[in-house]
Length: 126
Image 1 (cartoon, rainbow, N blue to C red):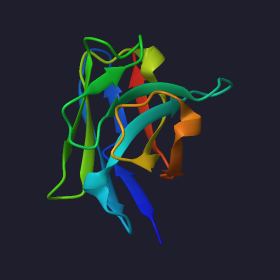
Image 2: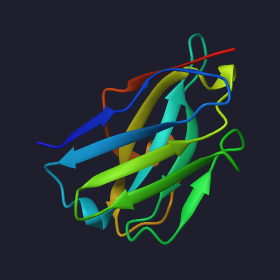
Image 3: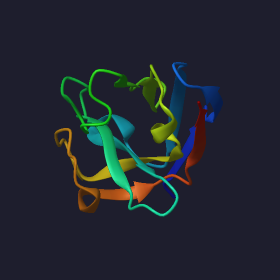
Image 4: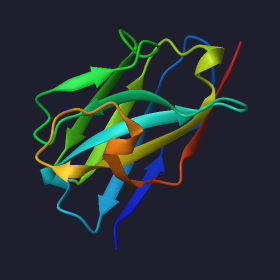
């Protein structure tokens, strides 16, 4: 049974930083690209960032570019999302997901992800 468990969310003031973690189990983590998505109240879920199976390629949504960094530690079966210079509009539930296809790149489309975590809340106050 595949499980993805996010942690590290919380409340922070604008300009602050948070690092989210996503611990994976039940799959060969190092064989799959991983992604981060977020969903704010009343909005559709959107792509934040992703990383290829080896970690050599990352891609970011427009809102994350220059402020967020996705990384992974295959020895710990964990993917991270470092978020800096946070803004109130970053407030959302953040989800990690594992790609459907193994040995893939840093995909951006929700439909290319098979397993999802339960999400962690990030709240940024002004």
